[in-house]
Every structure is written in C-alpha cells, then in structure tokens.
Length: 522
Image (cartoon, rainbow, N blue to C red; front, side, top):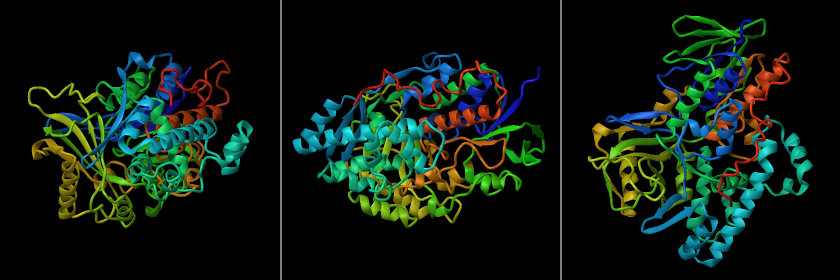
C-alpha cells in the first residue's frame, strides 16, 4: 500500500518535529530545506574554522523533547548528552555582579547579598507569581491549539476561576515587576525576559513573567551546542523514514481545486503532496514568496508588528578579566532609552549585551578552548527588524560594536574580535535567511494583551497547508517551536480521519504532556 506523502518546507525546529512525528506514523515525509543544514535559526556559523551556535543558546522545557522522542519510540538521552545547569546566568552592571541559580534558595541568598533582604522577599513573591502564571497557561494555551481569548478564559476557568484575574494580561511586564522589586537592577534583570520573545518589557504584558519559571524548572547544557538538537531531531526523523533534501528552496506551493497539491522547487522540479507543513515565517506565505495561489492561506504581518532582530557576533576569541559563565548578561545604564531607540528603528546608544561562552560549563570552566586559548562566543545586542530596508551604515555598526565592547569592558571583560575569526550577522542577514521578516527573529512582538492570539495557528485557510515554527502559535523559543510542530501534526492527523484509532497521538496526552520530573523546582 502506497504511503501518503507529506512535504515539510524548512528544517527548523518546528519542521523537524513535524517530520519526525509524521514519519513515525507511517507517512512518506520529504523535508525541503533551502540551506545546507538543519536547524533554521538554530544554525551554526563558521567563524575562522570554529563552528559556533548562531541562534538560540538556552535549552529549557526538556519534557517537550522527551515527549517527542518517546512518541517516536526513542529516548532523548540516546541522541543527546545533556547536563543540568546549576548556574542559570551571570549578570553584570559595571562592577556589580549577580548570579541566578537553579536552586531558588541559592538565588534568594545571592539577591539578599546583592540588594538586601527586602529584595530577596520580593524575589520569593515574584517566583510564586511566575509559577502561578505558567501553571495557568501551560495546558490551556501553550500546549493547546490556538484559540480566542474567550476560549482560553473558559479553559482556564474550568481549572481555577481565580487564574483568570492573575495572569496580568493588561499590565506591562515592567509595571508588574515594580510590585516585586525596588532595586532598578533587579527590575532590569527580570524585565530582560521580554527579549526572549523579541519584545519590550515596557510594552509586553506581565504574563511574560512565566518565562522566569520556565528557566527555574530547568536549564540544560548540550554537548555540541544547541545545533546538536537540530541534528538529533534530523536523525530521529531519518531513522523513522523521512527524507531530507538540502539546498532545495521551494518557489511555489501548488494549490489545485482549493487545496494543497504539492510544491515547485526553484529548479522547476514538481513534487506532489496533499499535505504541506510550512516551517517558514507565515509572512513569507502572505507576501507571495510561495506563489500567488497560497497567499490567502494566512494573514501577513506589518513592519510595526515585528519582534526585534539583533546584531550577532560569532567569534573564536581570547578573553580575560571577567569570569564568564556559559550565559552572561552585561546591562546598559538606561533601559528605557535602549527600548525607545529600538522602537524608533535605531540601534541603542548603549546596548545590553548577551554573551554565550559556548565552551564553558555553568561554573565557567572552559571545556574546549584548546591550546590556542581561544573560545567560541556568541555576542548579541538587540536591533530593530529593518533588514528589508536601508539597514545600518558601516559607521552605525562600528559604533554599536565599540559601545558593546565598552559595556563589557566596564565589567572587566577584555575580548578580541579577530577579523579572520569573527562573523557579524545583521537584520539584513536574517532577512536573507528568513524572508519577509525584516530580520525579526521571533515572529510578532508580544506587545499588548491580544498579541499572542494574533499569531498564526497550525491550521490555515487553505486545506492541506499547515504552519509550524517559532512565528506561529504558541510563540517564540525552541520548545515553543517544537510544540508548534506537534500542533501541526495533531491537526493534520485529525484531517486524516481514517488513521488507525490505535495509533498514538502526535505527542502523548496531546500537547499537555506532564512536566518532566527531572526538572528543577522553583
């Protein structure tokens, strides 16, 4: 009996997840990827011969990936080596320094020593509220198909009516943090969680406090970096029968008689399929990047609705002075001014700087520098998503780099950016890789209480075309992109009602998989 073909466009996390789950269920899966490797934004960049993660660097919500591998009859631990991180991140304001830990008591003690016992008490209250918000939204929103605010309220109300009033949808994250912290540095630290989805803490809802609880549940370090996760998902899909074709950009999604019929590659080759999972940004479909016939499948996104982009340096560098951990943040002096500049389409005069020291463990031990004394670094500052416009001048980029080095230098960090071993990615770089985004790395910005409900869901207006990825529901981030791939598969399977009743669902228990018992508590 001939298996039904499904084409997956794009080998980002959402596409890889969909491919593995569908192949495990007997579909004939072909993944078409425009670049030479899997991962999408979770890519590696060759910087002077060193392969450095150029995208996401934080691995959380392990239970999501355990469920994917389990659903495919495999174990995540057989594909990846993961180490639980005890230090979540190191933060610096000039000479002031604060580490946060997986152990909440250790974080409380550190905050008390840093800012006093009242701030430690505020941190306890903040953690309790972040946990409550996460618990309220995990099953009815993140692990469920996209719905309306009314439906979400109904689902939450069935569990606990009081939760309807305590997720802070109408108060900004910055204002919400003021209820817990008086020290502006702590407000700045926890306000930075808004940037995890490319948003401003002055415009996004207080609901995003839940990200703090996501990290508190567990952060892991991956041998081989985050790109190893993409390779693991690729291997899982291949072992279940999926085929991957790289350097194979799709020029058109074919639509016949009102439904998906296949794709046409840039080479002119045509492949037939009645089901297509598109792991590109939905704006690319709406803008006609996949042909005129598919444009009506989704609604587009205006430049004003875009999340932030970034300037990202990947460098094989020598460092000294500051004791880098794996994750490090060097804060600017004026947070409101930083986000005012981004809103105006400009680079911040003095940006907050994130550095992932990929070769270091959470204790700061360099595990892979080698005799050269160099280590692999990803250095990131936020930037507006203007990659499809004039972009930035060389002078503007040079000034931003100088200010970035000034901010890190205030904390005592000396680092080299050797031209032969440093690659800079800009919003224009990301627009070229992910068309119709302007370089926005997180889809829509999470500004305003209704922003999350405006994200594209897995189902589109054209039968047979499904969406997955960090720009679709439930949102940005590696685990969210994986959940979106599971949502796409769930809907596709429902649309194929003839599937065996004995077949397991795309992710056990739907996408309400219980939290991993190995996660750190908070």
